[in-house]
Length: 331
Image 1: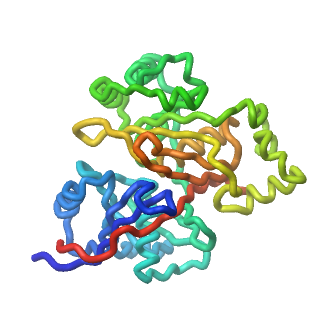
Image 2: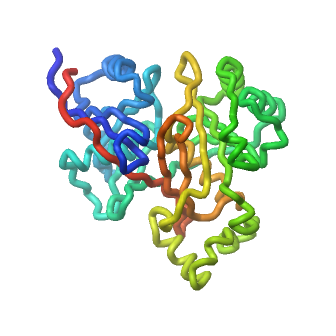
Image 3: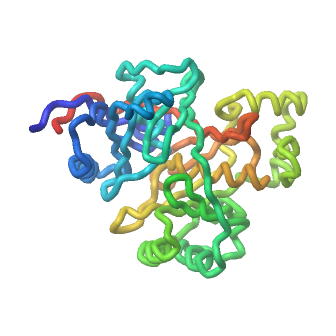
């Protein structure tokens, strides 16, 4: 038997309605089984729909505030970034009371995810990342299916933080803007590689930010523009103290494509991929310890993702959220 349940539709990675990545949030998923949830997620036809539940006793003992289940129109996900931030935003807006003064703890299939709420914007701790080098044939197939050539690829990695992603760092932003993916070929290459999504990224105007110093130690990594602050120690202190980057314009462009189970579509803004991308690039000295990525312009969106690494080398992924629809749904 159906009943009214509180519901919100939230735009994530934007402070302006309808310019980010939308998320449907059912704030009370109790009594719904997996089929019920999957059916509703298929009906909303959004990239993700979430259902909030009380945490399990074991998770409560570990400090969890709530449990979330995340569904695409075709399948359940162990973790995803924009559903994490959007669900947390909706939970807080609905009166949720965090147990911890700094963190909200979300239970999901990938484990317990911390979300910093004592500063703005909300930012989640990127889950543990497993990564590896692709074999040349896999890389060649994916590159061709995106309409690229291998000379444009600076680096590439398999990236798994729950979802199984594949990341490429390209040599310039224009290459990203001019992508010409072939959906059938791309889906075939993704299935063969065992991945559910593929993302590409490029730094903005690298010649204006100075040479990127390869990582010999964490303090050595920097872009020239960071030197605009008065002292190197000030840069380091701010990078460590902030749960999201210093206020700055975007310095990286990202695009991401995911398998819906039927076809491949472009995602407006992707938290989980930006998380794994930042973990990889920062660890290998290919990005600074804080930056802002922009995503979604080809879809008429203007998403911004804030990435930073703290003193423990934990990467935090932040973004603004705004509620666009607030009401009830009968489920």
